[in-house]
Image 1 (cartoon, protein in one colour):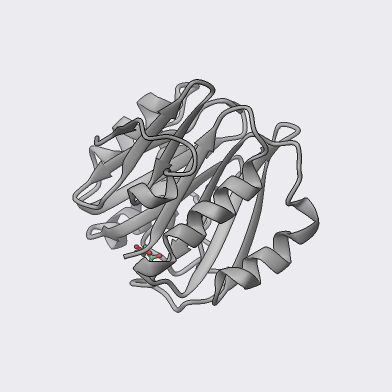
Image 2 (image 1 turned 135 degrees about the horizontal axis):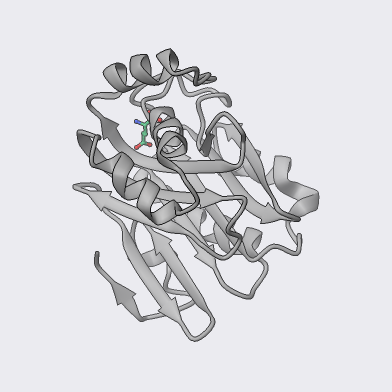
Length: 207
Ligand code: GLU
């Protein structure tokens, strides 16, 4: 188990991500990370251990003027619980990020194929294949690329994906792993469980 929180709206995103992750702490984790859009780039922070370590790293950016982001608490299945293996994971360009809960069963074959195509991996996780696979499928339409990539994936997943070129788009998908969506008048949310959404909305969708 682990935790995913995502937000696209009008409020400052970092406090929403951290509060959401705090509300998912009961699920257990060994590291944490978050990413937000800022000036056409994705800015990522990760830390080993408790959420308080991530809070220290993010510290002075808590009030950053960004209103799109993803947060993750990881329970390592593939690769040690290090900062480098913590989510979000990126594609080769750093312009696409993925958070993932679950296990990609065929990650080894996909990694071999993608490495053969020139993709460079920087972590030991199964998750990172998702970032490179989506990158490989991406031709301007992120939703189409995620669909195409997931058609090749075996295993369990809840994922959130952001792309630097689409600041107001958060793509999410799930297969077996839990993920809920929330909506309010000015925002959309994703989370591994309802408690992360309760401060903001009671309007919850179960995809
Ligand atoms: N399998 C992934 C990893 O080891 C995700 C683990 C999780 O669900 O937190 O990074």
